[in-house]
Structures are given as C-alpha cells and as structure tokens.
Picture 1 (cartoon, rainbow, N blue to C red):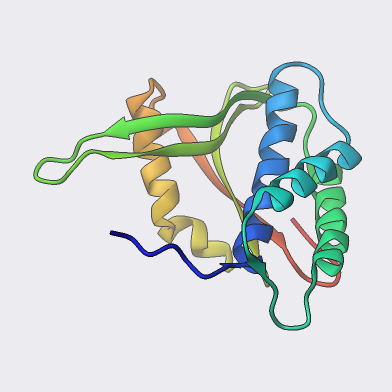
Picture 2: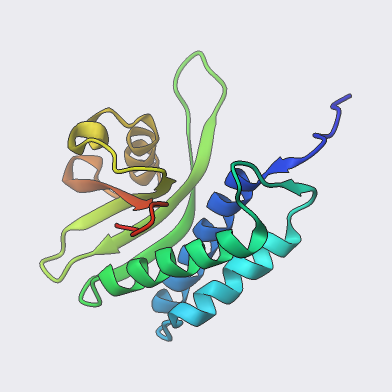
Length: 173
C-alpha cells in the first residue's frame, strides 16, 4: 500500500494553483468569455484551498504566495496575445511506442495564429528564466508534439513553445 505524504510542499501547490488559473483563463477564451486577472486569482485561491497539508518553506506563507501569484497572473494576463485563437486546453492524448506501456497526458494549450500556424504550449513556473534553447531539449514538449499528432494535428507543422512564468520579485513571462 502507498503511504500518504505527510505534507504537500507549498512550491508544488503554488505551481499547480497557477497552472489551474491559467488553464481557466484559456478555457474561458475558448468559450468566448475571457476572465479577468482577479477571477484568475480566485481560481488560484480555490485550488490552493483544495490542497491538503500544505507546508511552506524559505520564509514563504500563504499570504506572501498569494501576493506573488497575483503579480504573476497580472504579468501573464498582460502578455497574452488576444489575436491568437485558443483551440484546445488540457487536451488529452495517448500514443503507443512499441515495447512500452501506452503513454498519455494532457497538452496545456493548443492555439492557432491568424496565419493558421498551430502552436502547442507548455506552461511552467520557475524561480528564474530558462535558457533559450531549453525548448529544443524539453521532453514534455516532445511528448506533446507526438500527442498532438495522435489527436489529429501534423507534428511536422507544429510550433512548440515553453511559457515560463517566473516567480521572481518582478515576474516575467
């Protein structure tokens, strides 16, 4: 039997809560009624409150992380391109590679630009910016590209993007 964890780290809960808020934003755009940053923060709060036994470290607490989340979601909201059409949010995929169990997951975001380029994006929260070439070595994006092919997109025609929302004093996307 599995032993339940004694606690959940605030860093994991924080990242999951930001991810849920961003997914809610993209889903609302897909449905034609985009939510505001304060509504995104409500999703963050609800997700945080649903977590069990959250333990903070490094001087963080629920209030300081809420303030950081608010700043990060404001930056995210300001940087989103309204001219790009959201075509999928948390899209399930599954594929088989011979000799291994089926691989499945969820693609964070699929969008289409006005010139019909399809982009598959993965959102990460990070303590600092990632190297520019990290998109080329990111295994999750590789799996997303294969997964997008499994649900009907041409993997050779996709643009892959890693959206990194930094948890710095002055957040960046």
